[in-house]
Image 1 (cartoon, one colour):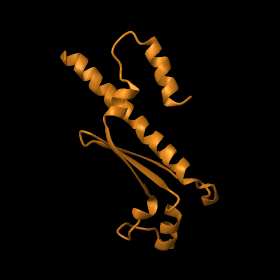
Image 2 (cartoon, rainbow, N blue to C red; image 1 turned 180 degrees about the horizontal axis):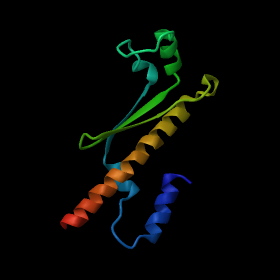
Image 3 (cartoon, rainbow, N blue to C red; image 1 turned 90 degrees about the horizontal axis):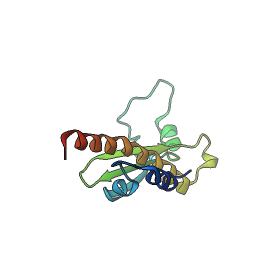
Length: 120
């Protein structure tokens, strides 16, 4: 079940204020993607016997999504196939976006609850 189907079901049963998919989507200022090899630049620590170039090569198959909200808050999601032969850049974008987007729900829920508590 995708998030639009879940939203349809949740809104059909809602009897009180709730966080909506549209509310979250409307708060997004930008969505950015990169691959993991940009994170491995030699500044980190590696275990003895491991090779930085091999790590960097393997990290090419990791997709990282950063969602930036209009207020500047950011969340990330990531995905990596177990085998690079299964790498699909479009699926990587979809899965990493979905993972990042799911992180937003609790924040918006907290904001709604705070507004209710404070009588906004």
